[in-house]
Image (cartoon, rainbow, N blue to C red; front, top):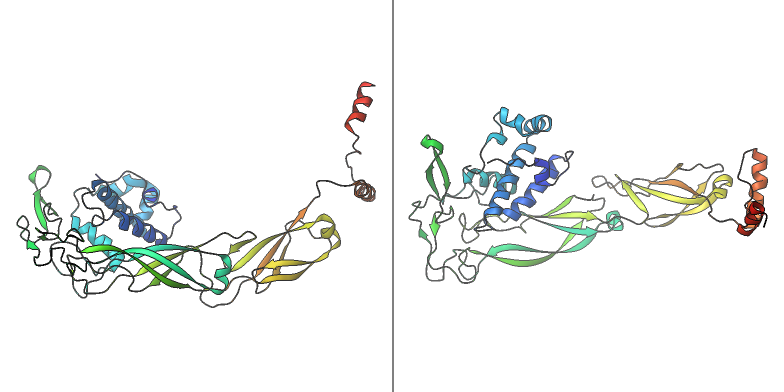
Length: 384
């Protein structure tokens, strides 16, 4: 049955998410729950199909508009994906959708049929965390990740050295079998249960890869992050993804996928980012605000002299040109925007209070009377 969960909830994105965010969210779920990575896990297969269904709708502007306005029922009434039974969907359709995202339609799964052109492997994604100072000048970060590589023992065939895969007798090498649909009125193509849709099976599997032709390997490399990069953007490292799938290219011949390194920028103690600008809340005393002052405002590159004029008000903004972050494309730096935050002292000594009361008299404004000690108040109240 099609999912009844909210599609945005399925992909864990906000309703305002753009196409790139939706694509990245689907990619993460698809890689996590892909049946090739979770053999025999029916729950993972359900989640994979659920994510594919959500992506099919939210990646299409017209379908997304209908869904946003009318929900699942709106799609069903228009014959959309919410009316399609994904539990009986042709498995190759699901994998085709997956590969359109990861390979641009290059690598297709199933049936022993080779794709047109050069086969391509899956893309991978990982994350790194950098500081706001690293955004200013760019930095190099060490990245560690795990990818599937061709098994060296069986050179990707999945069979024990000296043997080889054989054609699946159940599907005759097609990778799919036909089953009767509801009421026997039509037939449905599903993945062959014996070979898992590969068209070939292995009687004597390789001991190292357990017949999969691929083994997980850890890999480390150094990635350069560009100046001006934003939180959530990705740096693509070509050719650091996985080789083509073993059913397409057992020995891995073809084009590797890419590695997408998603940049997460850690929040700064003082600065808030607004595009290429930096916003700083600068605390000053009420006397500094009233009389004016020259202060040293912090920047990412050290203190900067800033003059506060007399009569400054809470929330006043002062702009320091060129002290923000560089634009990712042009390199031109934004500004530092200083928002004044006037602080009132919580405690005053007797001299300070006396002076302020004298000042209040010149303003002709009402203030609370002078406070008396606790014991003195008791005596006055109860005549003790």
